[in-house]
Image 1: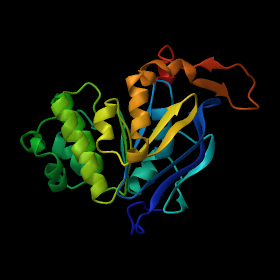
Image 2: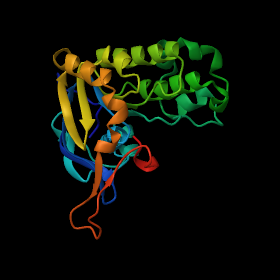
Image 3: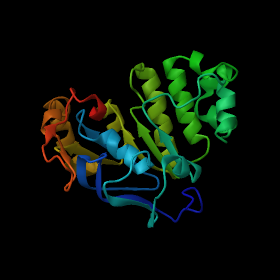
Length: 266
């Protein structure tokens, strides 16, 4: 299925009963998420809550341990490279470009439009002939997002765009994400600058304890989310999340997921 093919009006990206994790280790279970074309869904939670794991599962980088993901009523299948080829844009927290190639070469390799990339990020104009590995952190992140957006994806999955970047760069990246949704894409994003991200999000889902604790349109749940942020919940609740073995595995013990568990830190 091509996600970028004629998209029905207000098509939705839907996760139903989605269980995510690594091998036999469950990080979060029975997640129900929904975002329409033209909307931004902000996925929030403490380190270890399962945000990145959920995003990677939707992208196809990790297999779902249960449930399914659909777009416009059709199930998304296959590994991440097939989903990207079908029209899904994926930006993970690592740099998404090939460091030894120039910015322009990266854009040509991904089949994107350089003109569209420069429309989004005119700052890249003077750096097209520079190797991606020599760009600043902010420029590399702009390039990574441009690589995904220059192909006009129907779905954008973005993880921690602002990690380690200056506030002015963060604003540019978030503005590009909002513009992408306004052009008709369905966006799911994980973002450490929660309050800034709330400003562009149409919907919010808060992960805690391996489930969705708060979910709904931003306008309806913002007061509750602001209370959670004010209490420092997203910084301190990681230990409440649990990673458990899939039923039937040899080991039944559970352990807390938190900052001391690097592989599950997101």
